[in-house]
Length: 158
Image 1 (cartoon, helix red, strand yellow):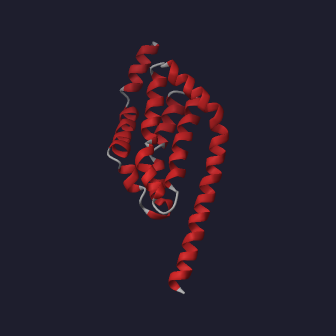
Image 2 (spheres, rainbow, N blue to C red; image 1 turned 180 degrees about the horizontal axis):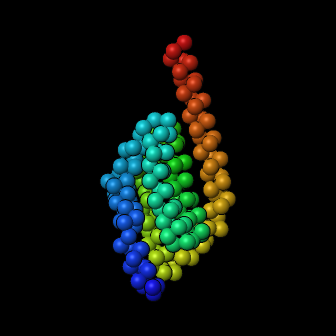
Image 3 (tube, rainbow, N blue to C red; image 1 turned 180 degrees about the vertical axis):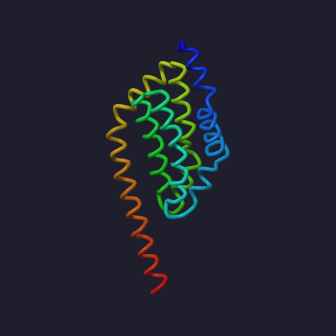
């Protein structure tokens, strides 16, 4: 199979079409921000699960670790921003649109867009450290949410 045939096959795959649908519904119709309103980080975690399709595609279909790191970076950043309390994160979530960013990277990678490939490689260098920091920040944000919920519960119910 030639490189061009492989590109066309990837672009017409069921998974690729599914990722386009996810991107359209979550980012263009702002469903990501609406689901993110569910309290306790549950809505943000639910919408982050949709990013697994992008991660799977970049790692197992495109076989690109740098692209996968860049996709994870965008998705975890979206989760962290959505976890900011007092609906600030929910407002940011409407504008961040990590799924559209991930599709742009994947499309550029499939089409051999040199500017996207350079961007992916630059992000990959930073992504490993960033992912570790984002995981830590997400953990701390969840701990902060639990602490706030405990204090509010104590004030309201004691």
